[in-house]
Amino acid sequence: MVILIFFLAIGIVMGYIGLIPESYLKLLKKIPYVCLLIILFFMGSKIGLDASIINNIKVIGWKALIIALGSIFGSLAFIRFIMGNTDILVESEEIQE
Image (cartoon, rainbow, N blue to C red; front, side, top):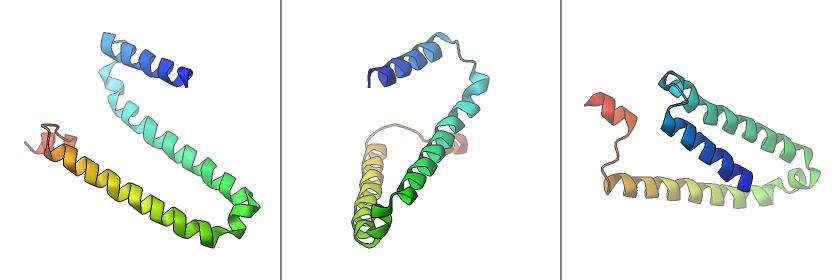
């Protein structure tokens, strides 16, 4: 956990003092997405290799679906609440103005 906080702090400091050029901004926005896809791939492969999960997929599937949908709708409701109660602009809103 400490190493995660350390690297986050290093990134913040490097961005703040200007060691990362703004020309890398588009690339920096894509990196977390690509990393997320890689993590999802490895999670899926781990699930596929675990016979006990595959054998109980019907039981696990419904519970996982309910938890996933609750997480999605909860996150969307929270974002809608925050966006409605603050002056934060989304990039697409900035472009339209």
